[in-house]
Image (tube, one colour):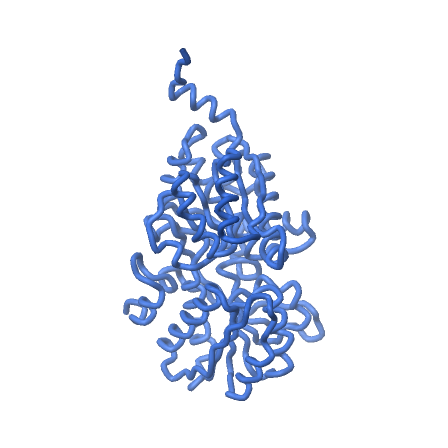
Length: 410
C-alpha cells in the first residue's frame, strides 16, 4: 500500500524541483522578427539572470522563484488557433507549471478556455484585445495593457501636442483585431477630445500585404494632416517608406512604432509620433531596472530591446514577485492568488493588476515625437508625455468604446 505524501513532504519535493516555464512566441513566419525573437531573447536573458541571483536590482535580486530555479522551454506560436490549442495541451502534458507569451490576441482568446480547463497558470504578455476578458478567468492573466490604453493615450497626446482646429485625420491599419480596434477606439477618443476634428477615412489592408500606396494617395487627396496606424513589421516599414515621400506634410502617428525604430531610424520623418505599447524602449522611465535590462540585452544580442522584449520580461517579473510572496512550496493556485490584484515594478513602469478580477494589468500610456539632430542618422524622442492608467483605461465591466463615448466617465 502506497502512503500518500504529507503536505510538508510534498512541499519539500516541490521546492527541490525547478519551476517549468513554457514561453510561447513566434519562432517562424513573418511575426518572428518583430515579435517572436525579441520575446524569446528576453525570456532567455531573464530566466538565466533570475536563476543566478544577485544580478537584478531589488526587489528581484534573490535567486529563482522563492529560491526555486527555472527551467525554460520555448514553443512556436505560429499556426492556426486549433494548432495552438493542441500545443497548449502538449505543453501541459510536458509538465509545464506556467505558460507565458502569446503576441496574438486571437490565439490568446482561443487558448484561454483550455488553460482554464487544465488549471494551467497562463500569463499573456502581448496581445491587447480587451475581448480576452469578456468572461472571467481564474488561471489566465495579462500583464500587458489593452488596445484601449494605447488608443486613448494616442488621442490624448494628439490633443495636447497638436490641438489643430479642424484637424483632418485618417487611418491605415492592418485588417485584423489589433488594427480594427486600434482605429475605432482612437477615432472615437479623438472626436471626444477634439470635437471639431474631421475624419477623412479609415483604411484596412491584409496583414503582411504592404498595401499602403492607394490609401496614402486617398488620404493625401482628402487633405489629411494626421495618419494613425497600428501597423507593425513589413506593413509598418512600407507605410513609412511611402508616406514620407507621398504625403510629407502629414504627421504619422505610429501606435506601435517603437518596435520598428531600429530599422526606420534613417528614414522616419521628424515629427512622427511614436508609441510602444506603454513605457518601453526609448519611452521607458530611467530606472535602475531599465538600465540593467537595456545594458544586458544589448551586450547579449547586440541590439536594443523593444516592447515585445519588455512584455515577456515583465510577465516573468510579475510571476517572480507573486511566487516570492507565496513561498517556494506554493501551488500554482497560490501563485495565481498572489498575482491577482498585485502591483509590481516592471521594466519601464509600474504594473498594477487591477482589472478583470485582478487578472488584467493597467499601466501608463506613453508617447513621444521623433527628432533627428541635424546631419545625424540617430533619432531622439522628445515631448514625451505620460498618461496615468486611470486616464486611459476603463473601469471594470465597461468596454473601451462605451467608456470613451461616455466621455471617459466625466
